[in-house]
Image (cartoon, rainbow, N blue to C red):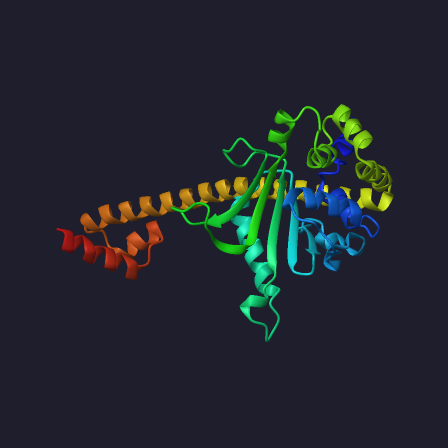
Length: 295
């Protein structure tokens, strides 16, 4: 399997967003979300700003979250992270707060702020807990069952833990995560056989990964990520080299000052010291004064 085929999985953010944000695939997203958030979804609306077929190459390394409004009053953010690049818990909190604040229109009160669910699907382990699906709320430190701040919930799904713990998909959530992860084809085939919507998702996935525009867009995004990494590494290397250069310059400067001090001590003419050290007479007089004060 080539590198392109390895990355062309439903958990790739480009593929994931194209698959679940496509008009006509609302039933796929509805079932997947119902299994995660545990509520019946009567109405689902995918936010238009995630329409990837309007994306430009300049956005190729931008955030590709899937933003959804369910039941008129809840905003759901789904974000896929294949690599551990940052403190995801901090990022999720910052991101949620920003979007929640922006959802309040002029003239509205705080009571009109929509509830927010943030779902982070991670291709790495972040938490020390055993569960692969972590549902978090803000509670009182003493009375743990008392929710202090409602209206916002965070879900972290860690795929490596899922792969380790689930060998046969038995629930709808396990079927969907098996499909999204796409690592164990025997399990994927089980999920497809057990769930008609997963079967539909598989057909859509086959279509998407055969679409040349999607492939090209994904290639540009992956190339940009690699370029970004290379730039970061080169920047660190360049920084080290610049540090060496600065260090050598500082070393030479210190050496000249020590030479000037010795010449001043021997009462060498200040003009001669300037000639051989490139230190101005003004700086030399300051240096002479400081040396006299020390003595």
